[in-house]
Image 1 (tube, rainbow, N blue to C red):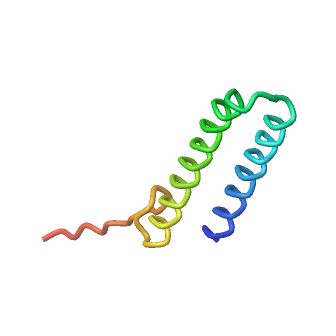
Image 2 (image 1 turned 180 degrees about the vertical axis):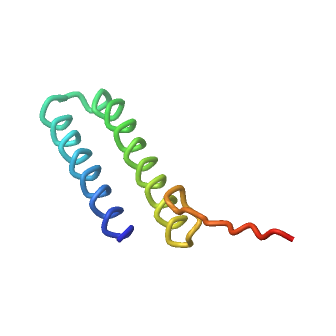
Length: 76
């Protein structure tokens, strides 16, 4: 289930990043200005992808932010 959520979220982020990139290509005609604007877009996409992958990997191992641990305390 976490894999489907991961893929769904990543696909949304990838689609938004692709749309932003296409808009940047269409609007900016100067090469250096395009590079100046496109590099942060690519870096933000890479950071979000890395964070999603890390959360997915952590959740797959069972120690993610969404897992709940039940501890049973016994009286002596």
